[in-house]
Length: 107
Length: 231
Image (cartoon, rainbow over all chains, first blue to last red; front, side):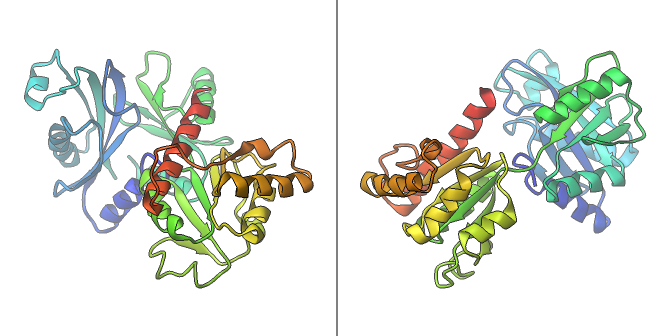
């Protein structure tokens, strides 16, 4: 167990062992002030249960939505959130930073 | 993420081994890298491999240089906290440190203290501290606090801890208690190392209850850990 991932990978293994589809989101770049550093993880299952975090809570909803699409297609997505982005005003990165989040299905 | 990659990360975490996973962001292809091996469907150039190994050593997660959109995620062993003395402060400190991400082990050969009833869900060792520490190993990701107030338990633990590369060593006790402890440790030939002991233990938050003291101890451990990382 790592300090920053807790039992996230154990949880992922349990979900998969139980036959539940799952996806893993990872912060892969940050600019300016962003709440979670590069490498931060969020794991999501097919029912929308999630563990971990990729922000202070402001973009988790959008990432979980994208994760459902990634689970369905099996194709990874690279998401970007920031204040310069129209979408960001809706999902809101209040801190004013920008983040890129990679979302992949877990086989 | 392939099943083998997921299993590899989970195994590295449970075995306290460092691991780096490199992901190509255009298609999700990945490889797993440790000190000796590099496995997976993503081939790395010699330069990328060198940079990836440096990230592995530093425990750093970041993009690799170059136009290939490669992201490297380092997984490093969790910090460990060894608590000598299954006392009241330990009962609060153990779950708090667990929540912060430490692997916690409470060491106390006195069964009445180190009981599962007093420490639900906490890893307990009923060995004498010198035996427990020899078995567990004292690495640089480990902190030790001596809380028992009993020199028969605290002293042998400190004698083993002081020469080891632990990132934090703390001992509970008044200034007077600590002076006496220092005399004993100096007599045991550890004069050059006794300055490593944090005592009075914990940040000076002014709290007095066992839970408040546990907060100050944990706060100091976190502070020392990141201060050392920044240095």
